[in-house]
Image (cartoon, rainbow, N blue to C red; front, side, top):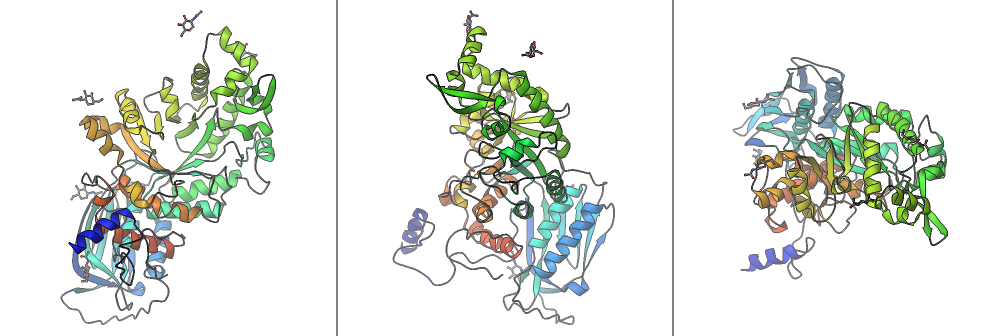
Length: 537
Ligand SMILES: *[C@@H]1O[C@H](CO)[C@@H](O)[C@H](O)[C@H]1NC(C)=O
Ligand SMILES: *[C@@H]1O[C@H](CO)[C@@H](O)[C@H](O)[C@H]1NC(C)=O
Ligand SMILES: *[C@@H]1O[C@H](CO)[C@@H](O)[C@H](O)[C@H]1NC(C)=O
Ligand SMILES: *[C@@H]1O[C@H](CO)[C@@H](O)[C@H](O)[C@H]1NC(C)=O
Ligand SMILES: *[C@@H]1O[C@H](CO)[C@@H](O)[C@H](O)[C@H]1NC(C)=O
């Protein structure tokens, strides 16, 4: 009974077990060598191997390429120096006595990549892999992207013994693959400029969480940090400061860094709303908003001018040569129709052509989507679907608003594909990782429709970090480890039994503690996930 009361109180607040019983020590002691996100199939034994860097080698048995050799170098460093923290006291005992649990030393990892490397990651890439841990461990995949995911898993299996004397890894078999293809993180670099070094760290953290799409919401109303070569004035006048820009070289560096980690970089140039900063250099792109006879500011792009589309075509062409991914996000959200309605010229245009302001948005999107390169595929915010713009079947519609279940159902029934984000807004600071963890887009639709085929149109989702309240100093800990909850939901097997926060297995609380400490040791200043505790770093 007592235990039951404590558990019940615990649901009310994740910080307080009970206001009258407190135990010393961490609330959820971290696990040892458990993987986040959880692999699809995993069998672990209670026998283990010890790790001695000077008696360990990695062998490539089949295909190889620069992505693989660089990854082996990265992970060798991580396993040698990032397990269990710096103040460990590893004793290299090559003649340690074996017992029934200790199976000897881990001597080798054999990597079999059975098909040639692909150059860039893409939506339908294969990320599956098999991993067996024994004295000679084996990692198999038919795709370089699967090998990368397997190396991350391998690195996460190591842990420090309780006496902090040795690094261990248990006998393990894993067969793993992602549940959703698109597992993204949106980062807004317009409301606050985020430095290259923090973007690279974000990519490192995404790798640790097997997330595979960096959705770069690069420009918005407040600033235009993208430094175009054909329209340099856009950032000269639109960036916060001349130091706060992303050059072509910066973008190339980010795209390459991401590629080596199996992460796609998808730029978003949100139009026609959220574009006021473009007007600092190109005021004629925008609509003057009126109050009576008086101009009170600038609103969305003017959908009636050919020059608007000409600039967008030339700019998008440049952006698409800098970002190799086939997908391109053209936004389309939150257009201030009232501004269009207030402008005398647009009012005349609407009258002449018998259009409403919403029709103007439709017209705009209809004109903009064909400006993308021929092999390019659009991603749009849900408004574009809601307003009835005809979209190609490979367009991805990003669901972000309230009433997400009925929105998803109407998108899916129309035969379109979608990405889910509504409940995964990281700027909601009162949301804990557990608040994000309980939502699974396929489960939500299935619960209502009971139609498995329909679910195939849900290709994934994104955690969104809007930038109003984050800058370089807090972005990493605002995102991590809360985005890890989304990462696990999108990678791991469905957990239909999780219907509310109280049904999240306690195992996950312990495992995310270990994962958070692991991210901290690997250079990401993640915040504590669930209350009192500590990391040895
Ligand atoms: C790993 O091995 C250790 C040592 O034998 C054992 O105590 C632990 O339970 C094992 N972990 C798992 C998840 O089986
Ligand atoms: C992993 O193992 C499973 C079960 O043996 C097999 O079906 C699958 O094809 C393997 N996958 C890879 C990438 O080797
Ligand atoms: C805009 O383009 C349309 C279609 O190409 C053309 O008919 C129209 O004359 C152009 N308007 C201006 C102002 O150039
Ligand atoms: C204007 O559009 C509305 C709605 O699309 C339509 O019902 C109406 O007949 C149109 N009027 C003219 C004059 O074309
Ligand atoms: C399930 O959804 C698919 C795809 O929209 C549809 O073709 C099929 O008729 C649906 N099945 C049922 C039983 O409603």
